[in-house]
Length: 378
View 1 (tube, helix red, strand yellow):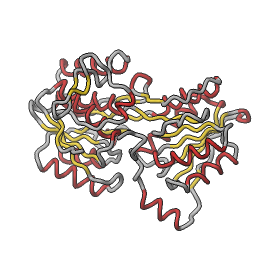
View 2 (view 1 turned 45 degrees about the vertical axis):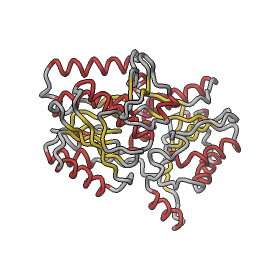
View 3 (view 1 turned 180 degrees about the vertical axis):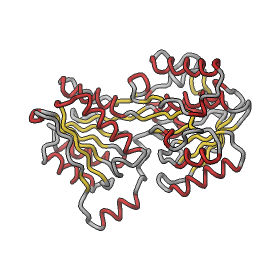
């Protein structure tokens, strides 16, 4: 399994809605471009979303990244986004339309756009294509894949959880599918949990659906009813935070700051700050040294970072807070990696030797769980 050989996050996102959308032949939704004064010589950048820009989750994190680019580059760029674009072959005509309207950089935000991005890159050699979770086949000098390193922030969330829950306690984790992106997020959290609470465990429940919030809610409630001490998730809706708040259970959220949904019970959130990695790529285009090497970016450059601490963090001891800060500083500085050996999987098989650091290909094809993770089968 890998991020590029098997559909990853958002491959199934809004599939039913996308099919209905395409079959109804409705016009695509466009934003007004974000223009800066003197934009004539600017890079014209188009983002492609399968959902809506301000969805409170995955696409809002990307749209915040777009706004970060506008703030970073000012009149050097012009941005726009296209919403509710179906994945698969239908997306090619949307990409092509953006190019014909003057865009010279296309950024796709879901795995399902990858083949259309490859096809467009082969056809339009003077346009740059920045593509979620796909590798360059080796023949294109205008195409680069990218993804973030969610394990960096999940690890810090796990360290905090371990200090909050009782010795030997259980964290309930809600997810959609056991794919590499989510598995490395789960393992990152579990590894952090083991750092601060070696006898604690993570109990995972899969919904087998990215977007059904009713299924997410049932999964969260089932875990709480089973007596877990903490809730965490890779799913980017507000459901886990809202239910945890009402049940008085501490929670860690992904993608965006969860305090708005759980002001009292939010511990922290590991935020997806896509703009930092995308800014590096856009700068390379402007500088004329664009690289086609896959871009895997984490906390070191700010592509993953922690939201401000929430109410559930306040009662921790000074010693616990100092440990969390030390681990944050270690990962953020780039002087330490989340997955460094010795490391073994749940069955006792050695994954990393002492001092060995997991490579990006290993991270992107992760197909094992750590010994303190339950509920995941391959």
